[in-house]
Length: 273
Image (cartoon, rainbow, N blue to C red):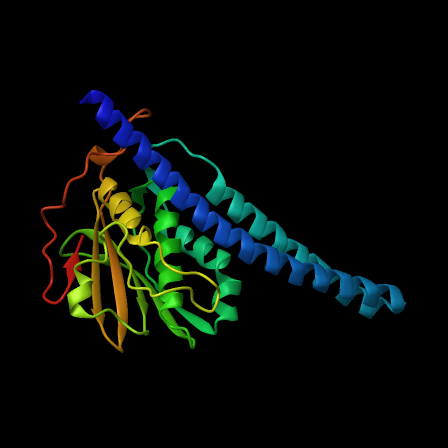
């Protein structure tokens, strides 16, 4: 029995790693195109500076080159931060900053597919989280939202504090095709997907993304709610419990056991994982 459980745990870790690598692969592909654009900018302005001897033109060229190089450095730093292995511990995390970094990584992809991202960020307390895992959830939800609007559209990203339920809430809402009611309750099932095949970017669905998101959110003692209506879009809301002094982990504390927050009550017409 112990051997069987060990194998299951090993396979779960392998699956989580494979999911993370898939997300990083998409980001690397996006970053490669972005770096090509940055290099083109740097080369063009370097040539401009060499052709023109006047000080004003050269100063403008240097400013553009410096700006492009700074963006390249930020892309590199953000992707390295997403790729590096952190200890399996929960730490006080600035959710606003983490979301901003994630949106920065996806900026070119959103622009390419004519997606406008609207942000409504309120000042909120830090949450207890493993940054890489939450970023993986964000990437899954944002890419899914983009794919739900093949002809372009808007994604609303909202961060707020729910005083009544004592949670920090993150909502990602698209205005795309939506999910029928008979499929909504199944979206967190492993291998289940609402996608019929690859989209314009050549990407399809494995059905593993939301199942992985569910597991990560549960490990953070948080909840995920989804509301959707065909033709009107889908909204995912992550509800993180407020961090207290008693919830701060010791240096070697692992993720808490999966448990539901008793203060969270499902809303009508929605699905909780």
